[in-house]
Figure 1 (spheres, helix red, strand yellow):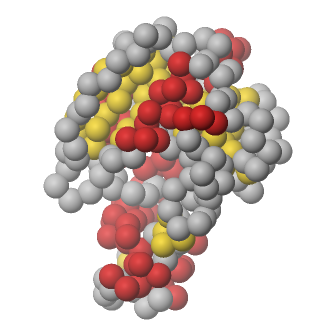
Figure 2 (cartoon, rainbow, N blue to C red):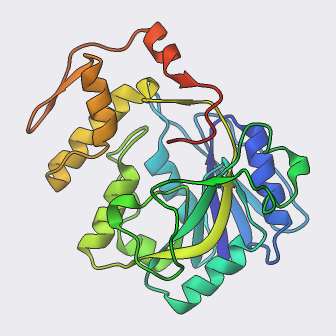
Length: 281
């Protein structure tokens, strides 16, 4: 059995597009598990697969790591597909993952993501595979299915593994609260345990939304999670963002700690919002 897992906070339209994409698939999942973060669960129904809704709350942050673990724990399938709520799956995504997991059952499989431009993510877009404007992430382009993926380039918005593999790694480390580094920590533990990270052809289209560059709106959690990662692995993650925060006089990065000098002003956060940016990079 294969379960598709997703997390949501707001973005109901994006979630509906994700579910519609799964309904158009050549092979439906056995179930979809949705974890609502810091919001009430909404019961949804599909003629193609059962939908399970759960809630996960955190007073201060979006509980991304804990919510992914809760989704995996609620799943009945022995194969898990983690798909970001912003993603519309290609019709072959589930069948591609099933084939990849059959060939390499002990690996983590990293799917492909292409980014849609504004106004290309509506329900009328169909399978989206014909959208020539969808762009790959520059760090993830030109991959060959079945080839290894560098562990430091793992991202959690589109991947799959067997539940036994997920459990063997302890899931996502719930010391990471809010945004940043929890997926890199997961891949580093996979590397340390010798779990392969492999490229899969499973394609998803990332729906456009406004994003912050750099993500000053997540500064507190990024700094806290970076320090947790440094204590675990001896190196700083998310270095590009940390450098950007340092250039703006918000933090100072030392060898073993980060000094928070001040929080960004609402005006500084607003200035980083790129409303017409089609991707999170």
